[in-house]
Image: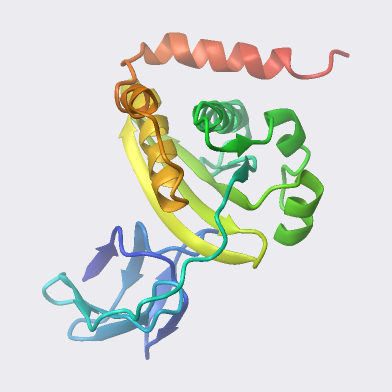
Length: 239
């Protein structure tokens, strides 16, 4: 049987015999698919090394948390952040413009939060690609407390963004989650993601900011796609 675990948290360590794990690039349980022989049970430790144990039963397909995580002391406040270029997981390099557009939109959404300093897209875009420096080095060069990285997958009329938040000062994963919506609701997806990040770093939103992030309009997917294409090529150096 195939078990899909969704919304559990950051993957820290797993212990299992005879398990095949398939995932791509993001160390999170969100949306990961586990191929488990019938009757087998998988135990995972997480999130964030807290000692909380979650069991995945391949027969019934339920997720059952066991035990309570010990209370932890919050780390230093996160007051600045950068969104690194989201990876294009479509398998088509021709979709790079869409991934870049989603990066820009998330940066814009976060930048409207008054209590958060967000690095510009131009500064963060230099770290596009797999050969970028380590997380602490990127954060040091950008002068930020935290980084957001992740991926974009567009399939038909669905858009999925998987993101993770990293406290760059300690090179520690704080949070990871996937968000999926129809192409018409991609702005609402961005607002939902920005709100989730703000909650995780305890950035207080004003009533106006909360309302704006929660009330994004629906769009015409074809028109929005044309807009993202145009902006992508406009930002490219001319020959």
